[in-house]
Length: 157
Image (cartoon, rainbow, N blue to C red):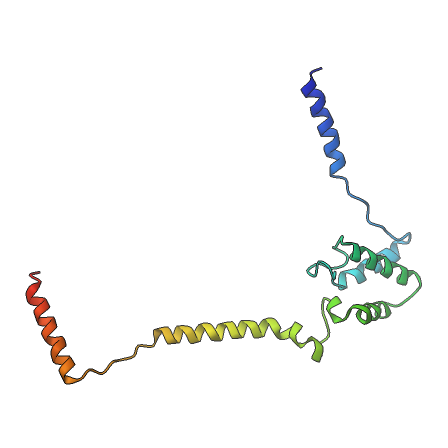
């Protein structure tokens, strides 16, 4: 066997190992696991911020999923678990935060930014299109007429 063939075989074998992932910790009871994952889908990963706890592999997300599993095993209700997470991390942990004074910017901030941007855009476009007429005095009109006549005499088109 050639040296290259042995190296190729080793690389292929090691390549399979590199793609292996660690299994996600799961509860012994499938009902507990389903309920814990359903709750984790409703909560935002505080590290990733655009993923649910169920989708995130961040260390904090893994810890929070384990806390949820433990609380489900102890028999706590979904509401109690969510209330615990909100009390500890605030309304931001919820994918659908409640509409109240402290979350108004979460709900309406993007709309306010969009409306402000559109208002500025329309204002600038209106200013750009605005044509202001300049009133000329009779002396300026006569001079302009003379310049036009002189220009047309010099241009033999």
